[in-house]
Length: 425
Image (cartoon, rainbow, N blue to C red; front, side, top):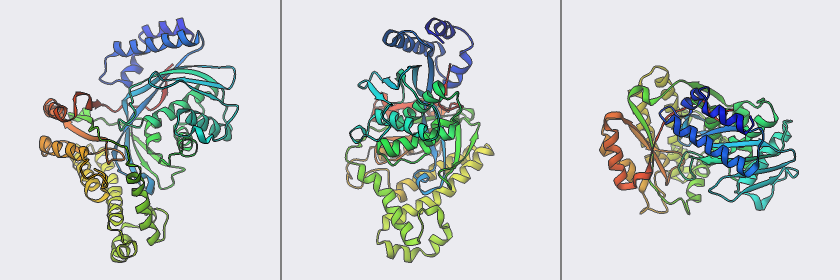
């Protein structure tokens, strides 16, 4: 729609149903004002045109901590906080993306090669997604877009995948008549991050954001993941999902992150496989003595312990979701947290034993919640975010106590939204 028509549409009732799904507990009028403001900024910068709104959510990992890179199972969900952009087509191959918190990002798609000096930048992701689409026979072209993101960098809800899938949807909307399905959209985004951005990420974040809702994924064949979706909300059972930013410093932790996959590969090598999924849990335990001796790395073996137990735990969590057994699900989530702490050992960096804010957050959650709800490390770990599922009757007191330690801005109430990245209009 052009500017005036889109302004009228935003003032109407038709959009309310979609916005209510994006923000299940949000202020509808406030959200409409956000859309109006973003459209006005686009009109001021780019002039009139056939504009589209695209919403790309953050994500939360519910089960399966570090299981995806071993071709295991995960549970994840899209959230009711998003990166919202308004975009219009350009006649040439120039792409301009404006995020007010960053310098303007310009990409000329007449060149689709990897540019080494562009790695680790938004431009590399736009170019990489366009290149992969071109390889797969999809159409590409220029655009101008401006965004407003609630998915903050470093918040533990995957701002990079949120941006990637949004870019893929821009091309899907403007040039491909929505022919790119959710799973391919995620695979294309992962390709760009792996090859153009330069980060060897898994596929979990992109799938959760692209497909949306609560999803369970089997990565036995990572190029053709099996994805199931479920109608589920913690709110329906009297609980609130929270993410708590413990504000740990990620600087200097690259080696800690990479050591997880590196050490698990040591165990895989001893067992003669590429990933742990390729050998059974029984084989691992029956040959444990030989594996310990051959790796000469107890932490690597413990991390393999975590995978086998965590992968099986996700299957049990899926059963609990299907049977609507919230108590069982919460107990399994707590078991996942303990396994990450004891065996995967990603709650704090071994290289910085005095730097343990996530551990403080988990200890305080244990004290405050006792046998209620659940709490665990969120995502990659070592620093950053923990997750808590808090019963409504304890929500205010829990938030108040956590705020005293980590600050009022540290606690984020999130809800599962029923769809992923979407062109709103």
